[in-house]
Length: 241
Image (tube, rainbow, N blue to C red; front, side):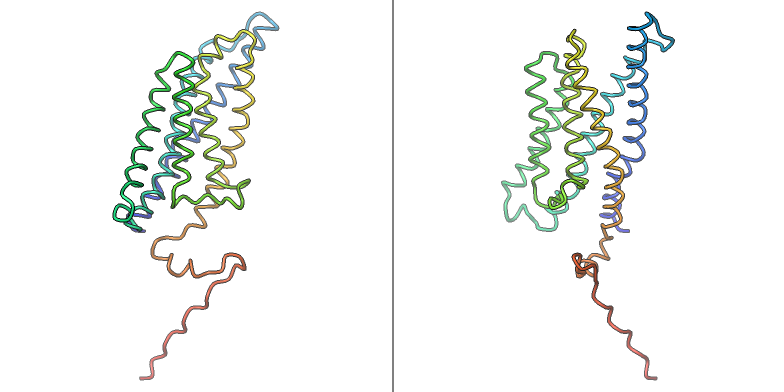
């Protein structure tokens, strides 16, 4: 493996080491929080400590940041690789500057989303962050598998990241809404996000198997992926001596 191959492993490595354990922790706290709320409503008390709600919110915010961060990292690698391989700064300097600015605006908007308290500002920063992810995902070099969007690691990841952005944006509304509409929306959408995370684990593993190392690409990309055939290797020359 060369340096480029090792850099390509940063995205899946962070997902395995950091993001997926956080998903399990947040899911556990979410279950306990809901069970405590239901027990308190029906029985007036619960053995589950009240701190689980606060821990769920705090670690949930960490998870949202990790998911959006790893999505940006997953986009940065193919976009950066395409810029370097195509020497894009010589062909279209404006596009390179635009991409760099989009990364900066997206990261800055997401940071400000965490700090915003008023609903209009939360809506603005959430929209800017989501729009930045989508625009970056449309850049050359990103493998989207659009013909199989229903089983695409890219689309699963973008939707999951957008749901995490939405979750951060509505935290204040969940605690202010007495009708529980925001809370129910949060539960439903994040159950869907949990399914997407499971899909991410499956599709990410599949994509790692399909991506060749850099020294293998010249040969592998000669293969016919539709008919699943590859050219026969040239026969070894025999020593006549």
